Length: 179
Image 1: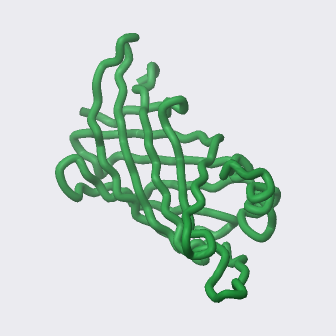
Image 2: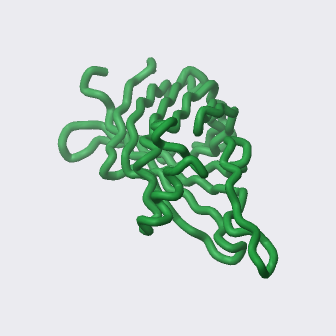
C-alpha cells in the first residue's frame, strides 16, 4: 500500500483541551477552525505525515470574556500569531493500533517537539462510496514551554491558571478523491 492522502471531516473531528482553573476545577475548550492534511501509509506507518494549522482566534471556552483574554498578548497573541501549527516528523508503532506521532508544535512563535499518543480506529467504506479512517490522539503540554506564562497568584494560595494543558483530538478522515 502506498502513501494515501486523507481529508479531515470537520463535522466529525475536534480539537479539545482542558486546563486547571484555581487549582480545583477544569476549564474545557476547543478550536473551531482548522485545516490540515494526512498522508497515511498503512503498511509503513513511518512514511505517514500529518500537518495541522489551527486558527488561534477560533478558541472557544464558552465564555466570551475569557476567550478574548486567551486571544490577547497575555496568552495566544492571536493578532500577531494567527496560527498554531503542528508538523509531524515521525510515526512509530507503540502497541496494537497505537502509535507515537512526533512533530513540531508552534504556538505564539515558539516551536517545540511534542509526542502525541495516537489510537488508529481503522478504516471502512461509508454509505456514499467513500472510505473513512478514525484516529484519537492525546498530548499533555506545559504551556510555559510555549511562552504562555501569564498567571495570577490567588490570595488564598495557589494560582489562577494551571500550567499543564491536556489536548484531546478526534479525527474522522475521508480518503481524498484525488488519491
